[in-house]
Image (tube, rainbow, N blue to C red; front, top):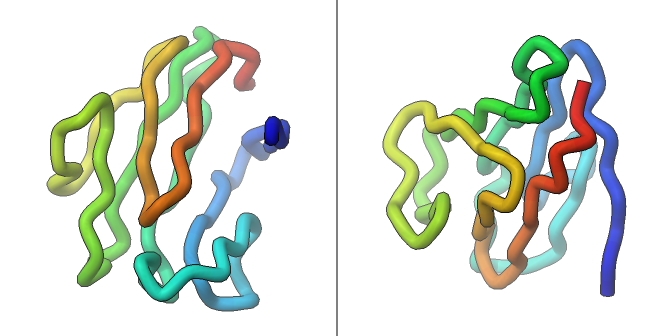
Length: 89
């Protein structure tokens, strides 16, 4: 399944809690897992861990703090994979 989530200027929150912009209903996802920010309309984004107890991966590497997402980067949150398509901003 493909779902498109535009990244607003204030960022996009992802997690299990209902107050997130993107809610993932999985026990493998923390209530507030990550926040994604567009990076100046250059097709990139920044992802930031929100102190979650469940690991997130960026291109197979565990996210620690912040990481840059480039077009084609894969963000794994629990058992859900998201690919940045470059249309951010």
